[in-house]
Image 1 (tube, rainbow, N blue to C red):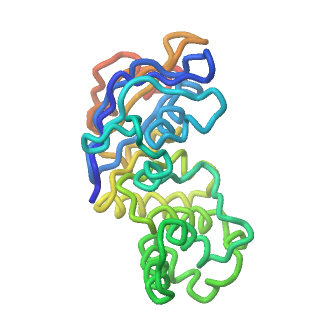
Image 2 (image 1 turned 30 degrees about the vertical axis):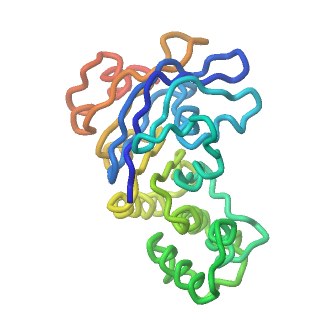
Length: 258
């Protein structure tokens, strides 16, 4: 069951450095929300606060609230590992476990989270690979290393691994930046299908990609060099790209800066 995210007054730090400041937004379930903005404006930092990955960085800490269907992910007694089970993540560069087979890559999270019969595990792995549009390409090499796949296949393997544990939310940090155009289109097509089941948030530098895959777009920017990143506006993607409310958004989208 996909869940809604409500963020209010979120500020993230690296030590004493304030990376992003006072961000509030709602991310709707079963939709794709894209984060765009110039390099260094805090898009990826904010993404990592949504599943408590930010605090894994030395000195990383957060103020404010992130609610997943009204549960405060930063509340007292909330287990960060449990949060990351509910809010999965796909990174910029494909990162299959290099010594594991295709099958074991997908099954890794399942084995951590509980006991499954062999037949159950095989069914879930197959379903996840089918959902990631990868099954037909790997069904005859399930027990060969995942690292032997092409870059685009590796990224879809990482998506299969992320969705195998049935998260509520799927975060994607520039999932296509290391891929060729054909692999990129395969991932974009996949995102369009997965949003029927998951709440998806994607960081992208590619504005055409944001326009193609997302329902809503959030534009982030810096007030000045050295200042923390801020959310400038968030709206339906069509509106952001055709008639943004803020001049800075229009300047960025039209290529006047960034």
